[in-house]
Amino acid sequence: MCAFLLKYSKLFSKGVIRLDNNSEWQTPPPVQRQPVFINGSLDRSILKGESKAFFRQNYGTILAASILPALISTGIDVIPFIGPVISWFLSPILFVGGYYVILGVIRNHRVSVGNMFDIFDNFGNVFGASFTTSLLLFLWSVPLSVAAGAILAVAGLDFRFTKIPRINIPIPTGVGLLFLLVVTFICCIPAIYKVFCWAMVPYILADNPRMTGTQARRLSTDMMQGHKWEYFVLSLSFLGWFILSIITIGLFALFYVNPWYSTALCDYYDNLRMLYAAMHQQQNENF
Image (tube, rainbow, N blue to C red):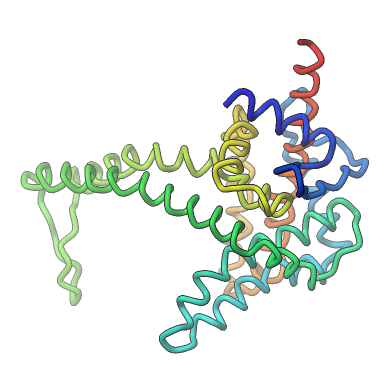
């Protein structure tokens, strides 16, 4: 494990991830930008301001890269019978392709919306890495959900239940409802922890589509050490904007908040990648 992380931290710092003796995927050198990590901690205001500037300067490209994956997946999904299956296969690839375009914009490279389909050159690997990551997250949540259900089934015998008018669905009230919320939250903590550990996997795949799912998850876990809480707070800081978009029936979120949010997360990954490379390069030099 340590050898793997040392190997890939060196390759990150050199701007290339080499996967075998015959293939490699170039990671573009970072452009000179204002640092968003001050003494290893994220300055959220700088990151959000920088990502908003990227978004405004490249509105059309980033807007298309952020909404096209969802629109294409939804459009395919309505095809009878086979549509949902095709959408299930294509959706993760399209979103990774969208991140690839946004990362290109952030790095000041010549990219267009059409470049999001370049990721299909490595369709099998990107799909496999995305699928195994989603499957593992699901498997993490199943035992916890079963445990929560068992606890509630036993404890719920002593709680009062009421029924929603006209729906006839029993729901816990009072102490039962509080117990339900507490148990559900506690049982979800391990799965949520894994979600944050692997949060960078889609962006790593956008940079390195030939990387296996195991490699991407290991690298994401290492990159997110000490950064899970700040990533959570960064995501939470957009909640107010998404709530505000309800007034516009979601149009404000579709055309402004979501593209900005996607840009902010891509910008966060790119800065975290540079911080990770710099820290491990310094550690390697100290050996």
